[in-house]
Length: 106
Length: 118
Image 1 (tube, rainbow over the protein chains, first blue to last red):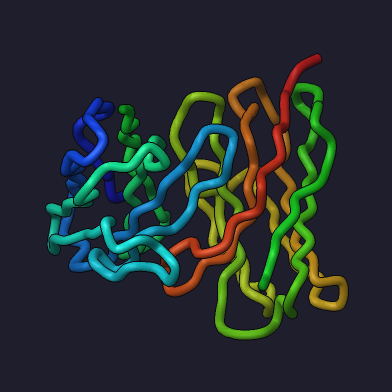
Image 2 (spheres, chains in turn cyan, brown; image 1 turned 60 degrees about the vertical axis):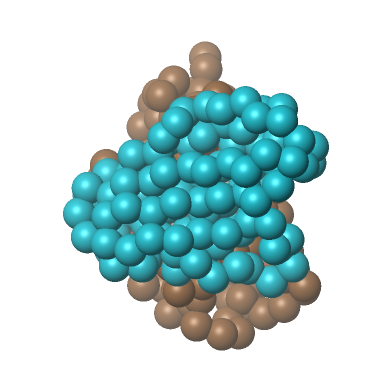
């Protein structure tokens, strides 16, 4: 199985700050990397697919980059409604696996 | 807009079989080239992919659960089902059904909490 390692596991930032989350795959996954946002008590929501493509309807302050084994997710200007846990997930092969999550607080 | 809704018992006894149904509304489960996945999340923990099925009934299961998992699809009812046998407390989690679109999980059900306890 491909292991996905996220860092940090949690972070606290101020409204308006730029926030960056890292995700590292245990082997090359080219660009088969997706990012999700999960708010408490809710199902995850797809934000970014194929490393850098913004899902329809997702605000432009969210972005993703990277390829191979190292990926980055960013929020350009943190908003109160962005408080959530963020997960990366690879889709290079089966089984699909997720990172451990990054909890973002204000 | 396609929506997914999980249903099933919220409490299952140890060693028994967990059975869940996912009803797809707002569109035909057979439309498009999608996989339909089950994913679970223990309280306060991360996400675990259980497996997936396509509308022909072809399945892929997580090797960690493969010996205990059975998935099926009923296209006439627009429903998916999950069965997990020989459950233990470690299987206590929120279970999600979801649509997989080229590797990304683009639609999720709201999830259903299943507790394994006597």
